[in-house]
Length: 259
View 1: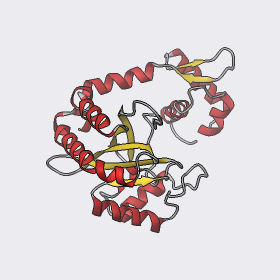
View 2 (view 1 turned 180 degrees about the vertical axis):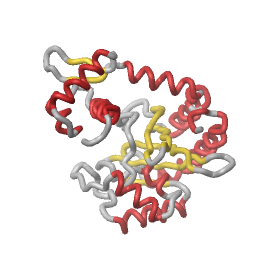
View 3 (view 1 turned 120 degrees about the vertical axis):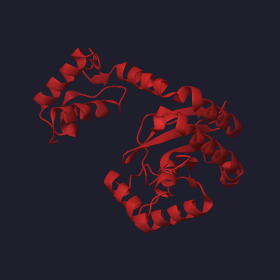
View 4 (view 1 turned 90 degrees about the vertical axis):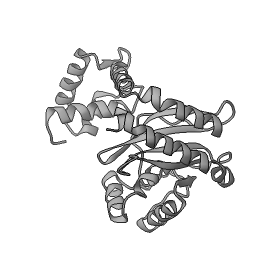
């Protein structure tokens, strides 16, 4: 990986953020694309600063909770907890499913807050803080549908449109299928996908926009097992999802999270 020391260091941090069990030094070097000696120096410096620790048994490197604490501190400073979390909690209670809020930052869409409405039975609860895959998630489609097809496809290809065997049978695997999904989302006013990210999962999502300019700011989604979140249930929840998305859109003007 070419780039500055800062770019390499952040690449190491991002890699470690995806594996709570830790990552061996050789794998870090290979995935980041740097010499093993450089990876070792970066990890040692991160250990010195308190952001990384090395497991004494496996020698794997893993993140400490310091970065997590910084993230929570930042969210608290934006007012998101006070203004936005109650809206997520209410929608989760009404739907009985997982509700997630994602924000648009540059050319990326990242899940940053959630509320779990399922009290028992199957629960769908993927990792928070990850970047949403645009081509196969309802959140991704809700954002892409606000763009013209050319810009939407450019974002998808920039991130990657893979054909992983882990994807569900309804995941779009070519541009024509993706464009059809986005056309339906624009007409409907919200996105919906079933058996796309993975078999047995379903989701619906609506965009969050600036109340004055209309600029897309993020996405609000409901996700759960497809056996429970079926087509009829999605249609029944559409009005509640759109109301909550509009409520967050209006509240965005007073939250530093969306500035």
